[in-house]
Length: 250
Image (cartoon, rainbow, N blue to C red):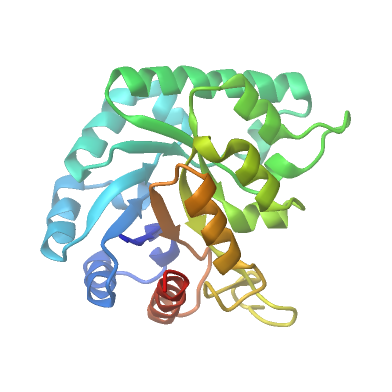
């Protein structure tokens, strides 16, 4: 299996050529891009090629996807990205009610249509706010998925948990739409205090062996991407997380 790595995790551990070299040496075969690595896509692609890494997935802002799709396409093609992912909605842009979230879902649906016509896959990436109940008791994530029935979902399991939801029912219900998965873990009580409460994958509180089995059996996920939002040691995180993940396949 080609384990991937979200490069956002390494944004504080420059230079990028050192990060890419380390990931290749550890045994990763894929990475996921984000805005911080798109300045010179051709040069970055050369570094990936040199280290035996591919970038099949990449994060692009809703603004770029809606207003500069040609720019997104040029970046994606230079890096080899085939699955475009919208990763976030700023707090001041988040709707406050069900109708607003349905409207946002419709915006994503239009981006998905544009992406499909251009030959790309498209998915929405969740955080925790999509699982926080609105005043009427409904969840933004339900409205997003219902209003954009043709787009995929990049499931960030740890953010689902932090949002107060159980990932398993969501995998059961929407597995066919899960195109990729962020493999992330939540620290045990009293640990990870300088890492925003995250941990190395397989060393926290999430039942990753069980969830990985469920995702492999019940989802359409093609990409499994390691991420830690604020690690204090990138090599340790990357190494220990990959070792843990490989043990689930044994």
